[in-house]
Length: 144
Image (tube, rainbow, N blue to C red; front, top):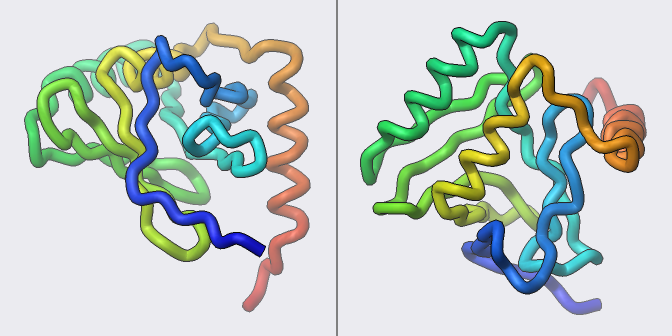
């Protein structure tokens, strides 16, 4: 079996290989790592309870400077965004027990964050992604 290890996959809205599988109802961003459909993961996305909270989060993201971080707090987890440089942002995750930063340009990450809008609805086909997330959580031991 071949071990897959990548340090920093990069994603743009105009990529030739489709990397975004979808966004489930709970705002998890399902991405194909480096466009590989055999390696898909769900990154926790931005969740807000009001328009003012969304505006504040988007403003904070857009004002980030290189070296700054922003944490997306979720009920069961959190996710860190890093401003790596001008028009370069990273989301932390782990693949095969190795830390990985997924790199995004501002337009791509801004589009993902906008799905936190209270009136946003996922595509009907992406509801299945939410079911997949639920099945993953049910298969995880609750006590270790």
